[in-house]
Image (tube, rainbow, N blue to C red; front, side, top):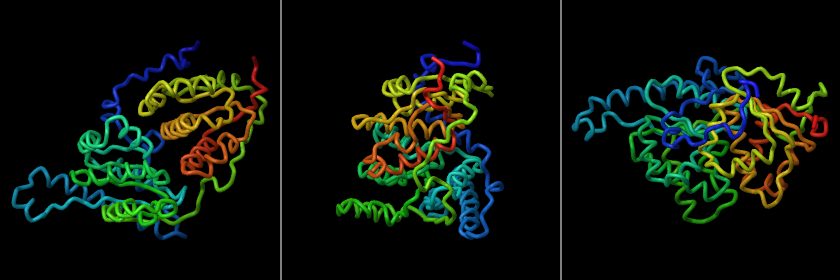
Length: 354
C-alpha cells in the first residue's frame, strides 16, 4: 500500500468526544468563507440585509464579551451589557446560509463552535442535555447548522437545548429551512409541542433570506464517469493533498459505522482527502439506522471537503426507499442526495476489475 493510502482499520476512531468538541472549528469547506466573499444577489435584497445584520451582530458580540471581563455588580443589576439575542437564519437551499454562519465564526475573535443539528442530536444522546449544555457554554457563540424539526423527538431535544443554553452567556446562531412559527405545524398538533414552539420563537431574531434554490428540486440522477475507468483506476490516479485516500466497500463502511459513535465520524476528515466506495446499493427496509448513519457521514464528508468516488449500478434516487424520502427524515435524505451528487464521481459497478 502506498504512503498516501489508508485502510479503514487504520483510522483511529478512539478520540475522546470531549476533545472533539474542544477542537471544533469551522469545517474545511467553509474555512475561507467571510462576509467579503459572500456576494449577495441584487435580485434578492434580503441577502444584503441579512449580511449587514450579521456583521452588526458580530460587533455586538465582541462588545458584549469584552464588557463581561470588567462587568460590575451595578452593571449587571441595570443590565447595561445585555447579551445579544440568538439569531435564526431562514431560507431555502443554496442561498448562502452556511456561508454566512461560517463567516460569523471566522470574523469573531472569541470562542465559537460549529455543529450541525444532526451532530447536536448525537452529542445530546451521548452526554445528556444538561452536561452538554455545560460543555457548550464554554463558547461565546454556538453556530448551529441545519436546524431540523421534522422528527418530533429531535425537535423537542433541539428546543430544550436552546432553552437551556439561553440561560447562559452563550449565544446561538442557527440556520434552517423552516420559519420558527411554522415548526411542527405541518405534522404535530400536540398542545405541549405548540406551547414550546411559542417560547422557542421568542429566543431568536429571525432573518429570512430569499433567493434561488440551487439544490436538488427533483430526483437526482447519477451521472456516470464517461472515461470508462474503473473505481480502482480512479483510486490509483487520484493525487492526495494533505491527507490520504481510502478504498472501501459499501458494506464494510456501513458495518464500521455501526461500531463507532457518529460523533467520531469526523475522524474521517482528519485522515482522508478522498473516499472510494465500492458497490453502493439500495438500503433495505430494515436498515433505517444504517441509512441515517450514512446521511450523517455524507454531511461530515461534505463539511470536510472530502472527494467522493462511488461504483454502483443504481440511480441515487433509488438508494433510499420511498417511505424514507417522503417521511419524517425527508430533509436528511434530500440533503444527502444533493451533497453526494455534488461531490460524487460515479462509475458502473460491473466495470470494476476483479
